[in-house]
Length: 465
Image (cartoon, rainbow, N blue to C red):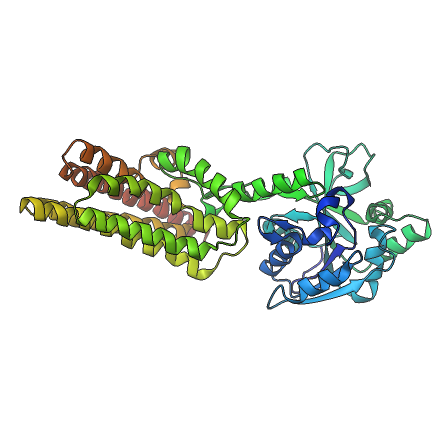
């Protein structure tokens, strides 16, 4: 295997017209068709930048001037050069050959209509090269439109749409410049497709596979397993499927049962439609906070029933901004502060309700329970965050007990239920009492389980050392 020196350059083949998307490509290249509000090409470029690629070449053909204009304004920190393929109607083999003068070192080779999980690109780069080309493959059963791959022992034996393969070509390659010699041989033989180039390399025993099914599925930021995904976008049905895939794979692992069974399906439906609008994730965040502090005011002034109903609305709205940002590939470091602001308005609800009870009854018992709630919630939230930083995995996903307990652990969503019930029963103080003991139990469980897992990790580290 080669020893990678830096991140490779990238080559995107974007010369084709996309005839099966003709309703959307009559006035623009296929790769500029928007997917959840972002052009497909922009998504590919964002993925490349996320894995450290600094130089990308785009081979253009049909309406190539639009691609050049879009690429020129797409990303900071990445140099993007367009190369015109005047023979673009022949086949994508000629797009590879059009860029041959620029490819003097290893490079990622991507199709402009194949969208994939950025983790696949990072893992493929890490895998390196044993030969001239390594092709990412999926072990799923191929369809009539897929390019099938027959591999044995990690080597490509044959490739093509009519091959009896055992995996599927994903259109994602790591190549050395030597692959161009096979491209020239294929062109000399009258071939026009990239798969013909790979077949030439396979005959020489110079083409390997990278199997994505062997990749790690757990995503710490999402607190759940997300199998590496990809999709070839050829039709409007594929666009809709890709959009659903983006929404589903952007969802964090819901912890409590209300978020899991109720909020997540609603959020996914809303984000699916919001992604096409001009509203930004930051605007959603501002709106969430406006509604949240309206809830605080309602609690403080004694409008308890509308306040408690709105807490559930905030619970759903609060899941939209982060998910919308992930669907659009527009996450940022500042977005991490959202959780801090969420905690602030959550505490403001408890304080406002406790102050209302104090004004109404003259008794401080609600304030005492409120103080305990804030202490316990702050403690277990901090414990939870510290565990994730230290262990690289959510505490909720650290064992069978934790996976079961997370459905009933202390969460704002679940605290909204006793608030509503107690208000309907005319005894709002009991909501603070219930939440106090729920938060106490959660704090004890989180602390004890975190200590258990971290101590085990420390001992394992000592043994390994």
